[in-house]
Length: 158
Ligand code: THU
Image 1 (tube, rainbow, N blue to C red):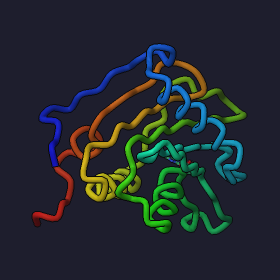
Image 2: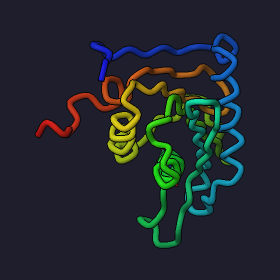
Image 3: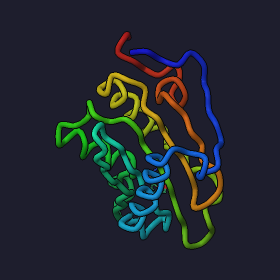
Image 4: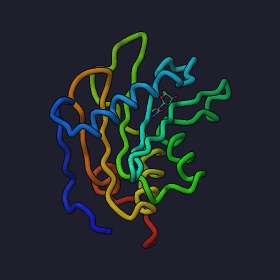
C-alpha cells in the first residue's frame, strides 16, 4: 500500500473542505442522535463514505455492564465488514456532542478503535481520510490511519 512518509495533519475550517467532506461531517453529527450513552452522556457519531457515495453511520452503544459497550467508529466499521464492503471504505468522519459541556475541539478515536481502523485500512488497500470535529470549531484532517493515528503499530510483518 502506498503510505504517507510523514505524520501530516491539518486543522481546517469546515467551510474550506470539499462538499463531500462537509456532507460526511454533517452525517456524523446526525449519527450522534442515535447514540445510546446514558452512562457517559457523551454522544459520538461516525460516518463512513464508501466508494460510490454510500454513507454508513455508527454511534456509541453503551451498556450497564460498561465494558460491553462499543464505540461509534467500530459500530460503523464492523457493520461495513458484516455486509462485505470493507474494501470500499474511503473516508471516515467522527464527531461528538455532550449535553453537559459543548465539545469544542475535534474528537479523536480511542486506541482500540485505531487498532481496528488500521486493519480496515489494509482491507481498503489505500490510505483512508479521517475527519475529526467537535460540535463546532475546526476540523482535524489526516490521510492515512496507520501513518498518522497508529505509527509503529503491531502489524502483519511480525
Ligand atoms: N467513544 C466513542 O464512541 N468513540 C471514541 O473514539 C471515543 C469514545 C465513546 C465510548 C463511550 O460510550 C463514550 O464515548 C465515553 O467514553
